[in-house]
Length: 174
Length: 432
Image (cartoon, rainbow over all chains, first blue to last red; front, side, top):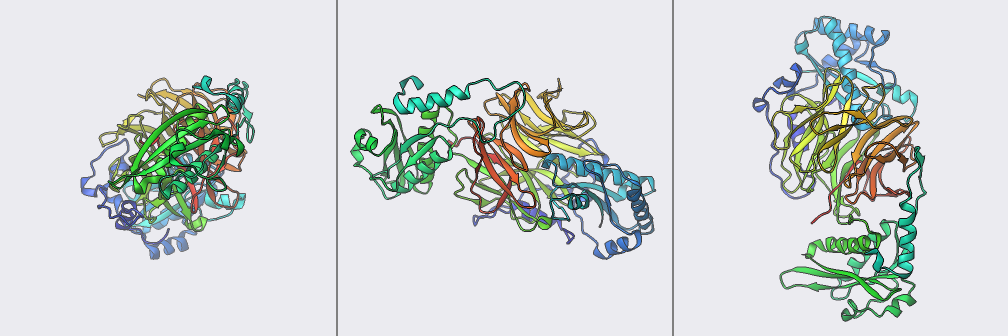
């Protein structure tokens, strides 16, 4: 998951059938074709279509801020004191490194339904984003997304694993 | 039709329908593994006329067994018959074999490369014909003819609609939980003709058939965000439903296939929107703060059932298709999620969360909830087109996820044959 994710790879994955039959190229709209629609400002930024992870900067963020991840209670999206301290440290790093953007990525544990967890992950990411905004990070540098329960970091089916998976990760991107 | 049936077949049928017609108790009840099964012993000898006739009989027998209503005998262990006896069987021969019903027929290999399966259903005990139909398919599609013949037998003897000639799309899963490969796969509902529709480089979830079974909507991670795509199955062509950076998921077609309803998450709030299937500006249907998701149309397209935690916990709500008249319909204990309206319109299937996660059904107006499964985490219900079975995925604690189908009147959940783990099944409409 932390490997570089290129739009091209995603488009190929989404558009290529697994069978031997040849398939035409997918019709995914490119950034230039994307018209501003929808209720939210961040929903229309064409630049968020192509994102590359930055492993060196990510390692530096973790070293300087202590962590790139904050954790949540079961079915909750409020930030406790520990999460706020981590995000405040991340904000200091982001202010000192103004040339990168951050994709704030919310996750849920497996003990929720798939669709609801997608919404819950977005709530968690949004809570972290709001805190970073309060620390002076410009909104244009912050993206929000959700992986729902699709990308756990701990494989177990127990409270310890679930606690690790209820998280929001600040992923530096360009 | 039922009045024509006599004897053992009739007895079994009356037992089944009599019990199934009882009013469900007014409180939520657990009918896991209960319910009523009839058990019709039905002979399915090899079809004369071509070598594939034996394979066809095997598929028919397997299909009928999968319904839980039949004990098939044959094609192994019983003799076939001369082609001229397909329409006029020697009933005594099949009584002696212990059968109370018989599927006979023959295969006609045509000069144009296609084949016709002549399919006959008989009440062996009463010694009478119950129906017949011919199915012409390309030679490669012989399994389709077998499914159609099995559907004829199932629907005539059960009184329910056909559902065996269908397909399933689902999320095929492999690899460790922390780096799971997820691909959308399609297969016949008996597990044959399995193939992948996506390559696995992007996380994909929530595939749903269009009403004609020719397209899918699904949620795919593109540039780190979940987004709804529309995929044409035959060509592999696909399109982003809502351009821009919107986080969209949980899509489902309207019954006429012209619109797609879905969730859009923004600023910590998830609402339900609808948009033309070929694009356009989405129309917002819900505005309440909270997570509004898993929308599903009633079969007449007039209403939408969805889940929302606007009242504090996940519960089921119904609204008109334009968003009006939103009201809660789930009031039992626990949380309720991922509702799906039955194709017959009478029931809503759901996931109930109360310690464990289980699949249940309730009347479309709410109430009369019945829990059908007893897994640790069962979720993601999808209806068979006849409204008699619900497919879902079962997550084992500490393990993988597999597909099951459970009869809506109660009975044992049956594991669906998939080559690896699977989740998020969507049952296709009946194929033409």
